[in-house]
Image (tube, rainbow, N blue to C red):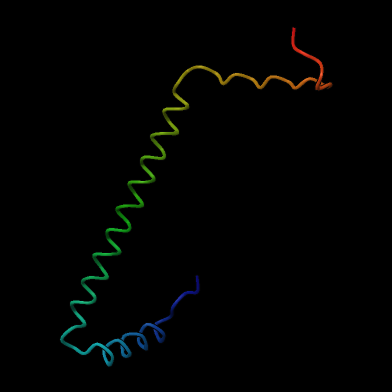
Length: 79
């Protein structure tokens, strides 16, 4: 993602001010802030659930069963 410098941020702010007007701009900024906050909260929830799931798998204490080797000949059966 490209980084925005101070000049680009200022240009976006001026364009938003012209498009939305000074009365609606604070409301729009507040809504954007709430959306970003909710997105961060959801991301943190997903990360914590993923970590819990991975730690539960690791804490089972039982080593995973090794995979059974496949027979070299498909007609050969296990005895």
